[in-house]
Length: 251
Image 1 (tube, one colour):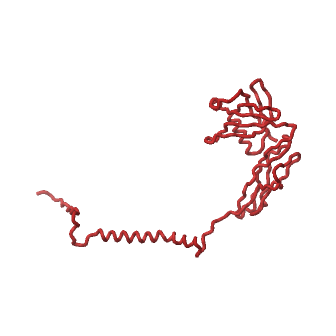
Image 2 (tube, rainbow, N blue to C red):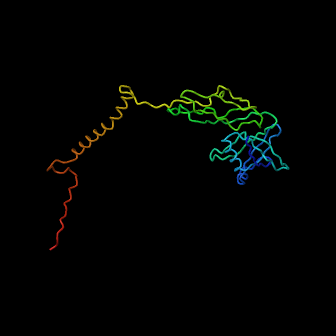
Image 3 (spheres, rainbow, N blue to C red):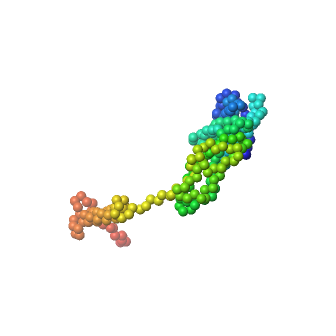
């Protein structure tokens, strides 16, 4: 089981958020059976790096505590991370201390391997359950579960019961819970001739041509009404047409 080391400093009372952020740190808390709730501070870059590792599997963290006369290590897991809703930056973290001698409940991520047969013929692989709860000693904790989905056809699935836990690990999640399934990719069919949808589609498609013809006819009528007959006097109040001046040489 992979471990990472995270430096932390014990702090007094409430944290001054702005000052800590300016110093590149965030407030956090560590608690557990052997530890009362203790306020600490950690570097933002360190916790971001640690959380990024979590996407690859479960991690046990060695928390190196200093400050307030302390210089010790605690085995912890990240229980919760709070992020700023606007910037998505981590602003707070909770750590739970784990006893190396007692069994605890952990969340282990699940990953798929292979390409499902159902996907090859147009289906879609759906990821229903992303984490599995297990109970074990920290030393037996698996980093992740991997399931081969290559045999999945459309309509078939893989449940928690298909998982094989290593020795010393008890799976706590309901064995009937679906992890992966392949569903058919729905394609909207065009309405058949004679159906209501087809009639509406035909009318809608024809509409632009009808409008075009009506508009052309209307424009033609307006043009005929606006053009005076040959030899007719100009309408009353209408400005007379200006005669073009002929340019010539002055004698």
